[in-house]
Length: 272
Image (tube, rainbow, N blue to C red; front, side):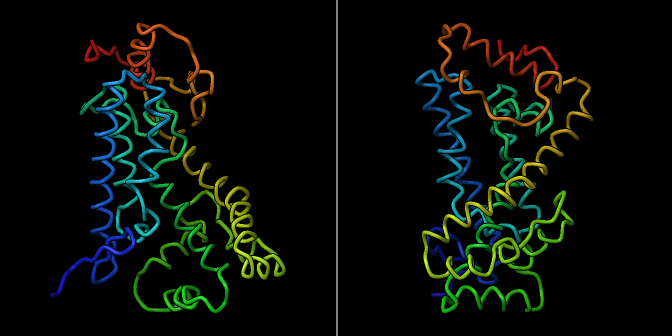
C-alpha cells in the first residue's frame, strides 16, 4: 500500500522529504512529555527550579529526537520557540496570558538556549559529522549532491548558517576549522572524530549561537516596560546553590509568584 509518511529510525519521513509531518509529530510528542512530567512533578511537590532544570534533559533528549532535520521547514524555529515559551508560561503560572516576552520567560526558567537555536546547533553538528565520515561512506556524496541540486533542501538550509545572514557571525565549516591531518585522523577513528566535533562545537558553534540567543534576550529586555536586566543581565542557567537550598515549603511556594513578578513586572494575582 502507498503511504504519505513512513517512520524510520525515529524520524517521520514524507514523500517530498519536507519534514513538515516530522516537526508536527515532534511538537505533539514534546507537549505530551511536558504535560506528563508536569503532572508527576506537581504530585511530588517539586519546586520550580527543579522542574525547570529537569525539562531540557528529560524532554529535549527524548521527545525532540530528530530535531536537526526540521531546519528546512518554514517557521520551524518560530514554532519551537513558541512551544518552549508556552512551557515557561505554564511553569511560572502565567497560563494563557500574554505577559512576558519569550526570552525573559526562558531566563526565569534558567534556560539559556532556545529550542529553535538548539535545532540550528544540531543541524550544524550533523553536517560536520557527515563531512568527517570516511570517504567511502554514502552520506558524504549525498550531502554534496544535495548542495548542487536545484530547489531547497536540508543541506542548503544548513549552508545558509555559514554565510552569517541569520546569525551574528558566520560559523565556519568544520573542514575550515580543522587541519588536513586532523580531518584524516577523524575519518579513520571514530573516537578522534567525536573529540574533534566536541571541540568544533565548543569553540565555533556554541559561542555564536549563544550570542544569537543573548541578542534576542537583550532585544526583549529593551522593549519591555519592566527593567528586567536589573535582576538578570543575560541568559544564564540557575546557580547550583538554588537547587540545594534548604528552604521551607512555604518559601518554595512563594518562589513561583516571585518569578512571575520578575518576568512580567505585574502582581501575580492569578497565582493566589
